[in-house]
Image (cartoon, rainbow, N blue to C red):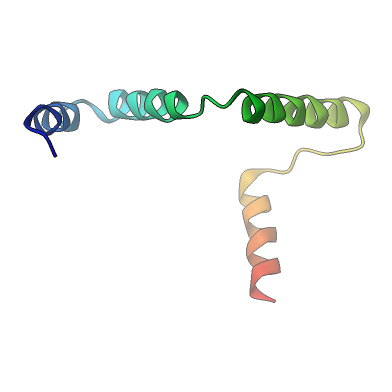
Length: 75
């Protein structure tokens, strides 16, 4: 690791948790630059939103979705 990167890392680690989280989101977003992937996610979000609006899908609370997944995986 370069000295510049080490200094930057040390400075970032001293930021408040909320600022580090925001920075992490921005860094991850900067890696996702494939337009085809972005378009696919946009289409999927639109499809799911349409299903919710049409009543053909229901919102499931996060804790319930995780419980369902755990139950499926334990079988």
